[in-house]
Each structure stands twice: as C-alpha cells, then as structure tokens.
Length: 143
Length: 143
DNA sequence: CGTTACGTTGACGTAAACGTAATGCATTAT
DNA sequence: ATAATGCATTACGTTTACGTCAACGTAACG
Image (tube, rainbow over all chains, first blue to last red; front, side, top):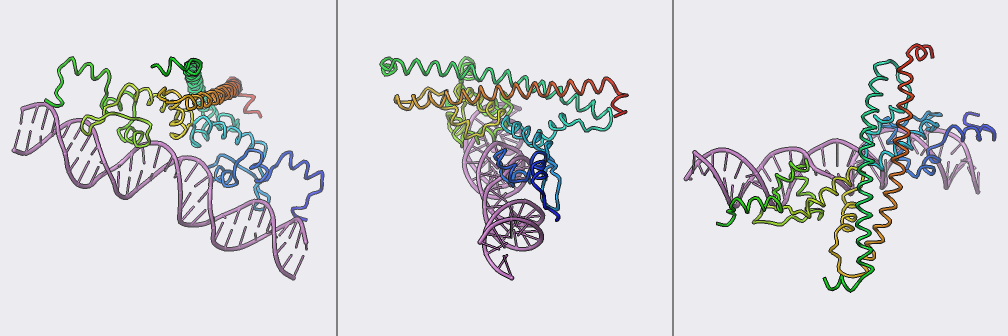
C-alpha cells in the first residue's frame, strides 16, 4: 500500500516527478551523474523512501547545468549561476548581491558572444579559402 | 659567438621568435602549460640548443587553443580543430576531408551561438525580474 | 670563477567530473 | 517462494589538465 499508485496518480506523478531512469533517458545522462550533481548540491530531488524523485525545478536546473557545461563552465561556476535564476533568497542584501553577480555574468556572456562571432567568421574565411583551393587543383600543385 | 645577437637581430627575433617567458606573459599561461601543449602536439616550437623558440604559427595556435578552452573544448578536440586552420595538407582527399569537417564545426558553432543567445536573453529576463523585486521591497516582504 | 637567472627534463601530486565495481534493500515477475 | 529488476550507498579507479618539486645545464655578469 505504500508505493502503490493508481493510473491517475501515476500519470500525475510523471507530470511532476520523474525517476532517476526517466531523467537519464530524457537528458541523456547516467544515474551516476545525477547522483553526483545532487551530492554537489546542484539538484535537490525529493525522496519517496530512499528513491529520488526529480521535480520540475530539478529538470530546469539540469537543463541549465548541461548548457553551462557545453560552454566550458565548471560545475562550481554553474552552481553560482543557478542561484541567479532561483528566486529563493531571503534578504535584500543577498538579492542585491545575486543581482550584481548576474550583471557580471551577463557581461561575460556577451563578451563570449562577441568572441564566438569572431571565431565563426574566422572559420568561414578559412573555409572559403579551402573551397578555392579545392576548386583549382592545378595552381595548388604548382605552389 | 653562438647565441650572440646584435640589436637588429634581437629586434627581428622578438618579431618572429619568442622565448617561453615572453609567451607566458603575452598569453598569461605558465611554462608548464606551454610544455604540456608541446607534449600533446598542439604547439611545435623550434629549438636553439635545448631552449624553445615559439614562432608566429605557435602564437596563432595558442590563441586558438585558449579560445577553444573558454568554449569548453577538450585539448584533443582543439587539436583536431587546429588542423582545419593549418593549410599544410598534402593531397586533395585530406583537404576535402578537412573542409567537410570544417563545415560541420561551423554548424556546431552556429548552433552554439543560437544557444548562447538564448542563455543571454534568459539571464536578462531573470535579472529584470530581480530588478523589479529590488525596486519594490514591501510587496516582497508581504509575500 | 662563483653566483644569479632562466631554461630543461623527469617524476610525482592534485582537482574536477565522473566510471566502475561490490553490496544491499525492495518491489515485480514467474 | 524464488528470481530478477531497479535503485541505493560506499568506495576505489580513471582521465584531463595541469601544479610542483628535484636535479641539472648554461649563459651572462661582476
């Protein structure tokens, strides 16, 4: 009777809660990864007994975590960033601090965007050059 | 007489070659890092005796290496990417392959740019929200 | 010619981010 | 009832990207 759920409950649960396995398939990560992120306080799944139940909040956070990783942020960096999105701060000074941190992060991100633009146009130029070489084989051989 | 250089030579050398110390200051990395990159075949400094002399090519590569790192690429990833910029390929099939790889990389980068735009606008939204809360302290306290 | 400064090669250490057993409990299937 | 499945914890292993000595070479300087 403890963990038994009827169909309706099961449906609702899958809406709000997800098991570790469901998370793994949804986000293409291993269980080890999710447990590791919980240990590092990046995720806070609830528990039914010992089993983890991942909430909508956990899913949103995980999405941001995986994004952050793709852009070369460490998990510790990401943990800071996550707090910026999490409006669960108590007093004004903490909010103020989070806000200022957020502005700094934003500046970082916009600098990176500019750098990314540069990388893209560099690579495009390099590819155009390559395309030329591929188009006129004789001259290349001559050089 | 061996390593002795007059002023003109010294000037020209600093133009084309850089010592490990100069590289470190120019790029804000440690000697260990540069030696490590050489061991991993990311850089190919020449030698005067045992001393490393970093060329213009090395500097260009290092710039790309550090960029790549900022965007979360592993050194091995970067090593592959560097070959795309390096026009030292022999035959047509290799160039063709490099070109195709370059196109794939370009697609990756443009996808990342889109993602970065999303991250930036998300963070902006989050900060706007935070700004509102900070502006009206009473209502926050009430909730 | 001794010292100082800078460079070299190993060799070993370390922090981050997981992987990989080994072991145990609790439902679920047969 | 027993076997299998799924999830849990604990603990040790691994890879990447360097840091940190230790021991030595050598070039320049007073």
